[in-house]
Image 1 (cartoon, rainbow, N blue to C red):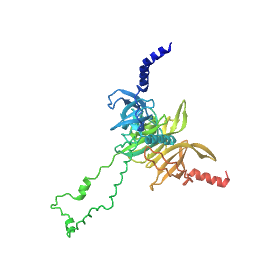
Image 2 (image 1 turned 90 degrees about the vertical axis):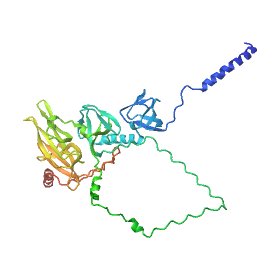
Image 3 (image 1 turned 60 degrees about the horizontal axis):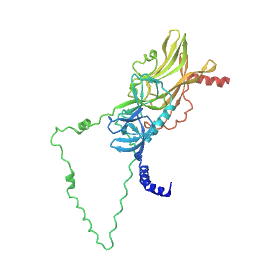
Image 4 (image 1 turned 120 degrees about the horizontal axis):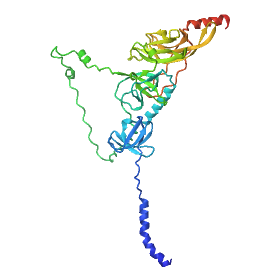
Length: 425
């Protein structure tokens, strides 16, 4: 191609190059909105909508614990962006703040270290809440006959739920600049006049007149009518789920999963804990000796008022009561574990259990029992100082050291001590 030809093509290519530059500078993708906060999904599943209207098309489905970036807010609705970049609208009541998510993780850690008080099931689906409040977010739904572990119980006043803000607090307003001082030589305003004096008869003016008639109701009756109503209490149970999470459910919706042939002896009282003590072989069947605790009045703050030990009678093929104690003020944890007991002249390992009981002076004792065939023996009891209960959803303090020297040992323990002192065995 000649030089003249090249010079002719250059003016023709110039508009095309300009168009390419303009198209390259323009992008079809809209600019992403700036993140103004973060939140986590509260329910087990949550549908994000393309618009604030709940009837609008679904943008995405997210699961419990998933992090969402908040990009816009309108009243109680927020526009969020998932980790995959999908944006949608949802209600702030369905989201958890970073602090709430951390407290929920701490609750799972604490529940993991607590001993199970027995497995429970439900007759119909039951919501598991992040806090012991009916209106708090529900992050899991227990299905019918799905077992959960009972680990703690508490009575909580039924108060309105106050969701925490998922957005950071607004920045404080900028301080106003002080007014400039008046220039030198300017005449200041006149001083304020003195306040008026108090009238001479101010005491007489302050007196109140007596009621004109006797028909007026006494003040005591009026106070009684205006007395506030007591706040109702809800019975909540902390349960541990199969996936390792933990949350609060209404206690009245749970049914302890103890066999019916034992549960029939509850006499209408609620079974609050049950533990299998040992296996008993009866022909081709294996039965268990059971320990359970019951509570007659569920409005009490303690966890049980009675406990009973059941043994399987191999000859009669039925359960029988081996030991029972009533009129107690008992607390979790109830634990089953082996203990050392004297069998004749030898010390043997036997099934045993321990539980916490409060006396009339408000002192709590950890009682240790040994279980041998049909006999239940109190081995010893120790003073118990539990860690203070944290607010719902917060981390519990470290467990206190075991108290220890046992006091008031049982008869077998005293006899064993005397035997060792006399014969050295």
